[in-house]
Amino acid sequence: MPRGGKKGHKGRGKQFSNPEEIDRQMRAQKEMEENEGAERGSSSESEEESSSDDEPKRKGGIEGLIEIENPNRVSQKSKKVAEIDVNAPKELSRREREEIEKQKAKERYMKLHLEGKTEQARADLARLAIIKKQREEAARKREELRKEKEAEEAKSKR
Image 1 (tube, rainbow, N blue to C red):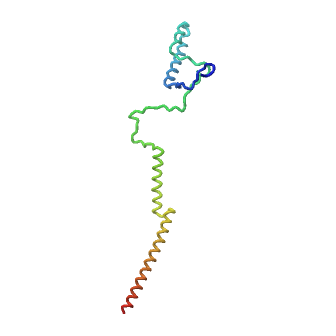
Image 2 (cartoon, rainbow, N blue to C red):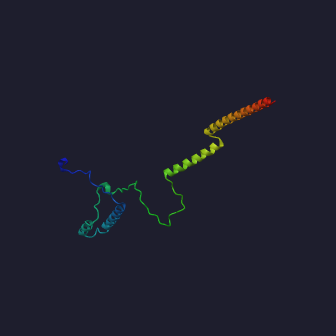
Image 3 (cartoon, rainbow, N blue to C red):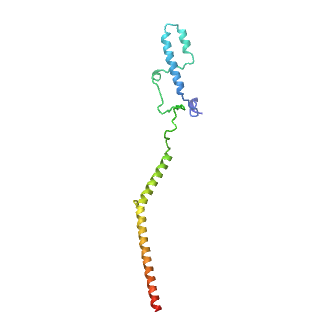
């Protein structure tokens, strides 16, 4: 137990004011101030009775003058069915956008690759050219060997 008999505050739940409740209280307070101005001529007993109703107590000092509104609070506004546009472009999530960009980049790369404008395509074409030359040389050598064998066979048959 804490010293001094004071209880801790850590386990308590937090209480948040509902914006609609705040607006209702503000309207009631304005009405009460207007009524006080009109009732100045009436007896003090009626004023005490009206102030002791379920109306919240007015905060003293500056707090009562400053209107506090949370700028981070986003109010959920419901849309009517007539206002909803079905044909409007749907906003994509970050993952969907990145996936689409990735596919477009891949298509762009493949197009350039087929045209032979990428480094990898140039390397592939150079490799293919070397292989083509080697095959042509091998075919030429085979042809020469075949002709030599035919010539030798023709000489041996004579």
